Image (cartoon, rainbow, N blue to C red; front, side, top):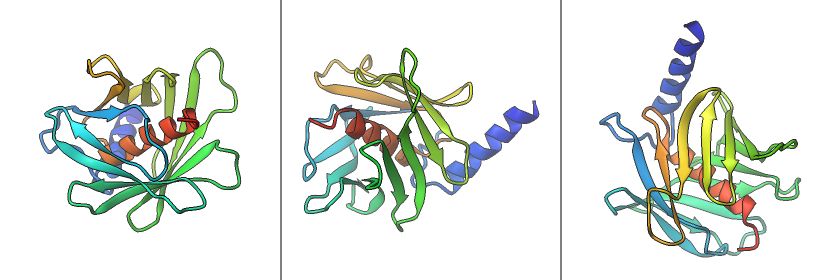
Length: 189
């Protein structure tokens, strides 16, 4: 029981000090993403389940390394991800608007049958990403607890997939994890 309480406390800490917490109503949030059909320098919108534009991902051109900035609907920077130069496209760093690292997305070195990624969260527990990354059918979890699910099953729109985020999570961080994984898993698109 103590472990579950500790996990809940860490979730609350992430939510309270996070980049952009989910809805005040406490329910799951759903977002629609377009499969990566852009290059660095292109932008795309992330919509909620009501079709409203919530975040914009701005692919910054004229940079030496891949940089994608998450902005709210008013154009304020919420977070960004950058490819790490010391590695060969095997990790991306997530930063808050002030440039402080909040997480690092890495492909696991040992991948048995399914794709597996690890997200090192600063001041929080690591998250595991498992499933079929290439087909956008995977979960993001903390131990046995699912914090988000990525799937194409919620949308009939071609080249779209959804992200369902559990209550108490930092939506902006989860969305940037999905964007970073998409960027790393589909580098040639």
